[in-house]
Structures are given as structure tokens and as C-alpha cells.
Image 1: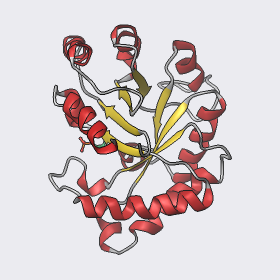
Image 2 (image 1 turned 135 degrees about the vertical axis):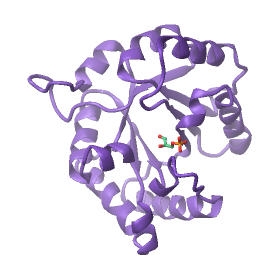
Image 3 (image 1 turned 30 degrees about the horizontal axis):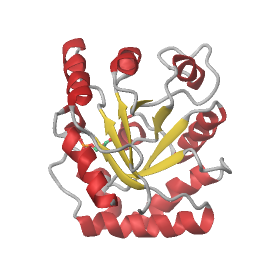
Length: 227
Ligand SMILES: O=C[C@H](O)COP(=O)(O)O
């Protein structure tokens, strides 16, 4: 068996109470691969986390989509890592491209968030990836390395970190990264990580499709690939 596969389902800012109930029912009823070979984590919006965590089958874990960079306090609208720990949420996604581009989160800020969340006991899905402009300028690996180094500079232990490569130009644009394009960056990233920090993970961080019953097929496809 190769590396354990990781399949994350990022629901982003989607869902109603009814839709969330329906997704959870679908995930609970679906026949999924053994979690010995695939680790499955779904990430609902904050407001649905307690419900999803309470109702979802225990083999599927939950993640928040973000958290505050330090201890909570007078930071209106934010959710702290401590709150997630208190709720029993084991994972958090940090540095998603939508937060980097729409909310202006810098690589340094993301690195600080990763370090703080890990220190509180959360596991982190750390996202890196280049824009179309950066890819066309030939700076894909430089961008990915800069984002990864900003995290590496703030943490020592990568045991609880999954790095998710997202080609930003392929998110919600109708453009699709070819397997070769993804593999090229994965290979470079893996080399860089092996040399510098040595975690080993394969898998997917799925967005829109994780809201649909086909997410079960994606989980199971990961098992076939890792067998
Ligand atoms: O977090 C997930 C990524 O942004 C991919 O989203 P997508 O599968 O909807 O393109």
C-alpha cells in the first residue's frame, strides 16, 4: 500500500439546514472505502459544524474552513482555534485560495494561522496554489514554494498538516488542470517537502462536487488509486 489517501470536501459558503441534512444522510448511507486507506474530512460552514459533527458517521471527520490567527477576544466575526477544539472539531482548512485572493490573506498571515492552530491541537489542511497570471508567467513553483516556505518558517512538526495544492485558475472557472499539470506540481512540492520537512500525503480537496452524492464515488476512487 502506498501513501494514505486524503479526501477533503470543502462545502465553502453553501447549504441550508435542509441541504446539509440531505448531504449528511447521503454520506451516512453511502458505502465508503475503508478509512485505513483513505482519510475523509468534510468542511461545512461554521454554523453547521455542530450539527454535521453530531450526525455524521464517525469515520468521516469534520473541518472548519478557517479560524482566527491567535487567541480569541475582540475580533468581531472571527472564530478561534480554541472554539473549534472546544467543539471537538479536529481539522481546519487554512490559506484557501479564496481567502488569499478575496480576503487578502498573505502567505505570512497564513503561516501564522497554521502555527497557531497546530499549537492548539488542530490538524491543518494548508492550501497553496498559483493564479493563472502566475502560471502564465512561469512562476508556478516559485509561488507554491513561497507559500509553503511561509508555513515552514513558522512550524517544525508537519505531522498534523496536509498540504493541498489548488491551481487557482482551475477553481470555478470551467478550466481543468490536467493530471500532468497537477502531477508536475505535486512532484515538485513533494520533493521540496521531502527535502525540507518530509510529510507524505496524496489526495484531493474537492469543492462543488463534495455537495453532491458523487462525493461517495470520489472517496471510493481514492481507495482504488491507493490500492
Ligand atoms: O476547496 C476546494 C477547491 O477550491 C476546489 O473547488 P472546486 O472543486 O469547486 O473547483
